[in-house]
Length: 160
Image (cartoon, rainbow, N blue to C red; front, side, top):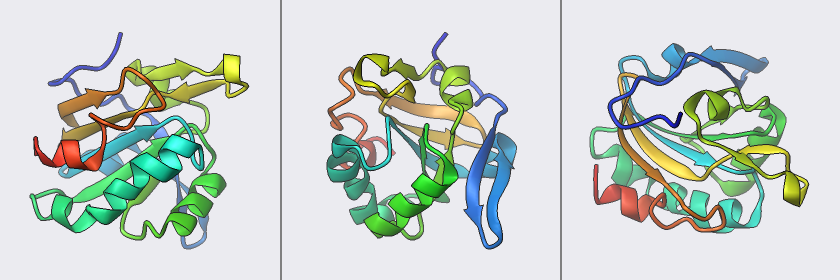
């Protein structure tokens, strides 16, 4: 079952890049007591994610944060090393990158996507959500993985 507005995020462990290498961070570590815009993407460096989706959040980071948002985070079914390289390549300092390498979060939220037909395995659907203290307040899921329209930064700015 897919997560809905009003639901609490499931408890999973992400991997994030820390000063001493990869670190484990739980859902509570990342979302408890915070207002976070969470973007889900099918894959780091994939064309729609790299060229269309993430750049809008990089460009609009300050505008989003000025609306009482504590953090912007991106999650993908990639390992922490790939996400770290993507963050650096994209100039996305100040945006948190959450590795969901085993698709635990994607599956627990019901937002996984079967990309096996394209050789991608299990991936995340493309979405944007506003999470307030662990509770989903806004959820915009794309119907087509190659589009970043309702999950883009400009669309999210209209509803937060």
